[in-house]
Image (cartoon, rainbow, N blue to C red):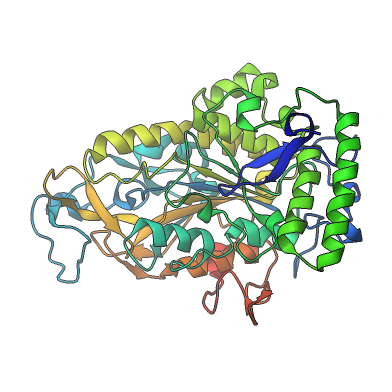
Length: 474
């Protein structure tokens, strides 16, 4: 049998799942239904890695959506107003502790207006006016985030994997390791990024030493054609019955190979990938095809890739996918060292309306209470202008903003503060490790007990750090 007939399965280095057949039968369950019986046992009678499991204690959230503004959006231009910057605009700031990565000049006032929104009266920039007008009272704004270093790669790893020095299992991998998935016909952890990969690529969603089934599956959301979104989602040469017969044979050979070599995580991951790939053929084409959505819904989300991937996210959540991460685009689009006013306005314009529509959609469907939505970048930006153009801001890990909504997060609440210029977190500081510990707590996990034995020690997402920030929880 040639590759053209049999197909090819496995997880590529960037997380793409190559489609193929499996011995599993197509599911007849309704979309979104928990389906542990469909794949309760994997190869050699082992429990399937994505079978649903319970957390340590009752959870507030069941699923997570991470809106990753890669590149680092400016906190003082989005969710942390600093009127003192207008007073000192163009002048040196009276802050001897201000240290930046590159040469900078004087204070740079925000070119965007801030207004108070909702019953909570929280101030938000016009850049996210639609989101704030509709949902500020559902949002928990953290204005006191801080990270370790002002460089993209380690900060992306820290935010995604809990370690800025070496890529370890990502948050999505830890969550699916702990909870499994509520749908056995789709990956438990899906990553969407239009037009390519962010900086450091699949290292941001890798499973590392966790079993390969927990790695994120990458979708290039620039495409509208389902066959391009998910490669080889349909076989042009074989029916489902024919593919199942082919994979029955392949599975027997793989299991025999596995039995002769004991536990081999890479081979086990390959077997599971074959099985999942076949099941995806019954559901992936439907979930990623948004053409059947009412026109009013599609209009609300917008026709651009950001709106499309958010609408696909809602459909994936309905079908029980556990963790979904959405990036702004390839490389680092929010990294605006120059032309910040133009580029931040464009980028926020791509996200603001679709986020508002997404949160409204979840709320109307009764899904926001159990879906934790998280927004932010790997760090923030400086309150001073960067030389030589004086039209942008440098990297800033000392203080930045993120927000949470739904899933048990406290709505209409602002936590912590940066100094009067927005440079460093000074009040109720929240480190990335603390954020991870809190997210796991909302999902029902004690972050110190969600561990995996590797290389002679127990590893966890927060390593030896982290505290649950109870004030963020409703």
